[in-house]
Amino acid sequence: MTVVTRFAPSPTGYLHIGGARTALFNWLFARHHGGVFRLRIEDTDRARSTADAVDKIFDGLKWLGLDWDGEPVFQFARAARHAEVARRLLDEGTAYRCYCSQEELAAIREEQRAKGLPMRYPGIWRDRDPAEAPAGVPPVIRLKAPQDGETVIADLVQGEVRVSNGQLDDMILLRADGTPTYMLSVVVDDHDMGITHVIRGDDHLTNAFRQFQLYRACGWDVPQFAHIPLIHGPDGAKLSKRHGALGAEAYRDMGYLPEAMRNYLLRLGWSHGDDEIISTEQAVEWFNLDSVGRSPARFDFTKLAALNAHYLRQADDGRLTALVQPLVEARLGHAVDAEGERRLRAAMTGLKERAKTLAELADSALFLVRARPLAMDDRAAKLLEEGAGDLAAFRAVLGSVASWTKDALEDSARRFAEERNLKLGKVAQPVRAALTGASVSPPVFEVMEILGRDESLGRIDDAGGRGSRGLAE
Image 1 (cartoon, rainbow, N blue to C red):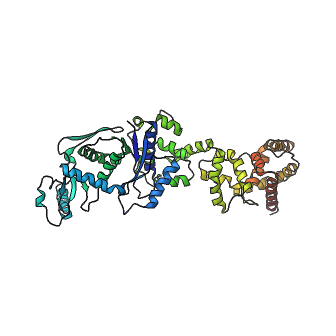
Image 2: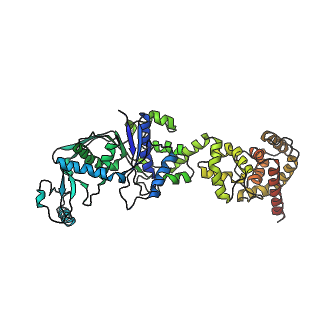
Image 3: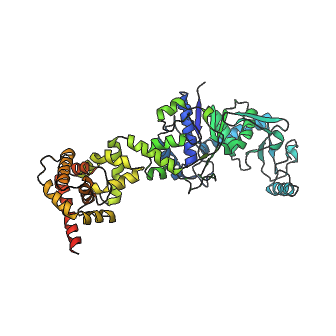
């Protein structure tokens, strides 16, 4: 048997983080088994479904690296097929026409509510002669569900789950206007797409019982179900925007890498021993449903940031430069020239060691491409004021450095410090402030090599002038 899974979002908004995890689990399960991962857009809610939301779902999945097989299926386009199945069930006697008006149904619900009874359709037209149908009332088509016994599902995550059939009423398959309901559409599409495993959030568990009955009524094989616990916030409450219930594009824009998001989402409810850093290749090799927990996972931005920092350190410098440059340009308000791009690429090894996101990486790289004279933060200005004399003296030494490399520059700084009985930091810190406008940066001598002789000396001269004015004042 070829494993076939699917991700079936409704295009009424962005690809939220819970949906992204569901897509990931389906993708991994299919890839692990050498199977097929399908994408279906459940766009039957025409009032709320938008083309923009469809594009966001596609973009989010592509950013996460979750490639689907074949063309996406759009559920609304298959409405005629869904209706065909309902009419077949009607012909076979496993469905029936119900002529209850909305007013009748509302009265039934009100009576049940008053008596403290579960609100279920009582099967008024289940065995009634259609000849008694009232004139001018378009009927719905309902499934003739089993009334005795239990519906039992061997869920691959939840274990065996069961419900008394007496608790399930005869659900509507086709509305009075002839449009199919969600339950019918999902079952028909899953059957026609050959879905073997339905992996989704456990908020769909109650739907599974009704869908199971519909599969049986149609005479079709029932796929295996796996209902995954939902994601909660760090405080255990339902996930909300303040917890991280954002679209995939929001995480991209905040500067997270797709491989970090895949690793983090994988660990939200699934485990492989004590492993925390799990590559995509390992995830495909190891993934199984047996290791999905039954308790809700908790979203934690701190853990995500730490994981993203790891993947930043592992990432190729050229790739990071390409990702960071547009962010830098957005902050500058203009394009980075070829020299600026060279500096970004040359500095990336040092910069990425201190960043948790691409946004932080872009902020820390700005000093490389800002126009002179640099603005100084408060700490840098204080370092320049305190070290103005040493900086001016070291500037004179730098003018005679023959080889502008980090090793040669560090050697000259060490000799200078020893001659003046200073610690190296007393020399390096004001230099760092002059070159970067801040008190924290990659190793200062690496910065000097990356900036080059002329730019480095020019920035030190700029800062020396600033320091002289500060002392005069």
